[in-house]
Length: 363
Ligand SMILES: [Zn+2]
Image 1 (cartoon, rainbow, N blue to C red):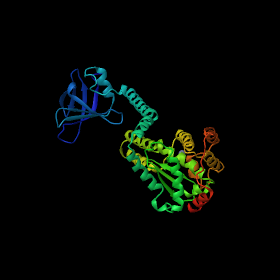
Image 2: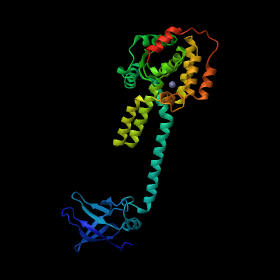
Image 3: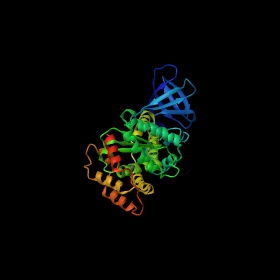
């Protein structure tokens, strides 16, 4: 084996023209023959700089800058030098271990992705819950201000007191029943035929005139408001935003570079598309029903409104938005019925003439 001659190209480090050369393995060094002259390269001072994969030639360097170098196309050279056993272990790449190394690095990648996925599925939601519970209310208010200003711009809001005052009265009946409410509840009515209502973090409640138009009693409006107020009090929207951002940060961390940044910015722009988790909806229903009871408002209004939604085809344009965030399934309605406590005294919300005045003003 040591008598084998290998063919390569030699550069002395000064003249950029390679010379054809032959290389022989010896016990202490490589013997390199160039133009009839022999050079000895001691194994322990040779550095392999290329040739760790089959598609590039093996390149070795020797000495200080400007270093001499040697290129050999045949990777059999590496096998031979390792099998001869003269060179220090690990100084030259071992082609026979490449598959193993590839396998190990692939496994490493799989494990890294798996760990990240587990982090995302288990740790991240917990972290988001923790963070969202500890975000200062002033931050939530700034967030909610941005969200509500985007989804309900000032120019689209109803300013007629004949609409806003009785609506505000319904909100106040509810907030009066929230002990130590940490938020200032701000109501906006948007002039829009779409049946919709939503809450934004920090105390913002937005109701579309389309929803008021569909309601047959003030108790129905109060039912929707009680539900939305719970999204604020339970910080569902804030948590959705934190999760969205945290996901973006994790994706940015794994994918790094421009793609990651895009993802992060994408997550930030989705702040307005607040979507709650199914469990959040159940919580808002249950706590909302409880709030109605404490405020002395008949909970059957809330049920009546969801039943009305249930009767709508899911693609009815006016209803599509609220239906997609609040699917009025049979389960939901059955649960609402079981949550409604029959044993409390209700007080009327608005009398018929005031309700009718509200309906005609909120258009
Ligand atoms: Zn909801």
